[in-house]
Length: 376
Ligand code: NAD
Image (cartoon, rainbow, N blue to C red):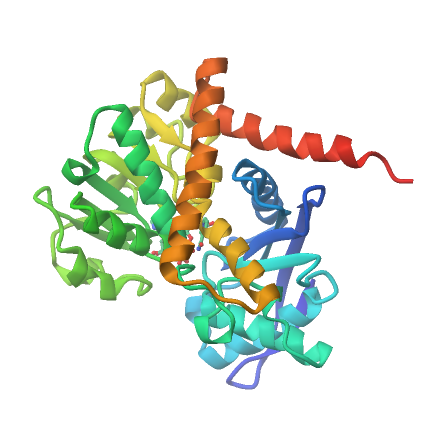
């Protein structure tokens, strides 16, 4: 859709937005909304497809969707961001709904944006629909534990992969690319385990200290692009060089296509946990595999977020809310169940974890399609 937004200076600007539903055979569509200058139909379609496989891999009853608006949220005032969000929500309101398609935050959006979407949808319908989006602020129907769920899941997978090479997470060194929602929450939680984060960056650059960074002091700089670079709390490092530093665990948590055929031969970590969606290109994936680098694929490693989004939707529909401990425990047990299923398939089929995860996810979608049959 193309839609006009009144800017603060009185100008009218036309923005392009998208919502794509990829597959609905296992339940209503589920997937985030991204605000980024690079967003286009192909990107949203690919992300919608990943959501189908992700929801199926961790066995939650949703299909896949994704949305986005081509814009730079950092260049918009709060008032402009709100007007853009309300107009975009209105344009997609024929598609979304608690029983049809449930958006959530992704790159460039946050709980406040979800609150505006929920309010806009509810104003059109005449009463409050908390379950129309997830990742909302807790006081209006958000779930405890949602904000850090994706990062928490990433750390669980880092721990499980580390075990496979007899590495205790608390003795591991870690690199994180990205310091937004996923990167910062991963940093906080993995630091709490005792692991040493040696480098972290946002889109402008970051800091590096082989002795370990002081993460609690850096956390207030998350979601403020450029602030890490100016913190002088370590040596400067660029967003691309950071990927090639030496560490036990590398966590790309920024955006897609960061590890490519070009830099894959120089990756200096034993384990990669994909916090972002699609950070490794398919040809780079082959090289990493040949080099024996263990990799937890995005559709499993960052699924903690959508699992807790599912819990948020369930809590909203029942108007009955769980404690943070309950949310975290249930998330870990769902993620671990999926991990064990993937391990079993990987061992049986003698394949890598990404292929095994797809085998589990695609089979569930295929089974649902066959069971439902062809209408009429
Ligand atoms: P965000 O907008 O909160 O943060 C993105 C971070 O990446 C920022 O620090 C930004 O500066 C940095 N960045 C952007 N481009 C970069 C580049 N070229 N090099 C280095 N850093 C760069 O986004 P987010 O919600 O944390 O999402 C990050 C990734 O995780 C995306 O791929 C998203 O699809 C995926 N993801 C997010 C969630 C979630 O719950 N938010 C869940 C699953 C997957």
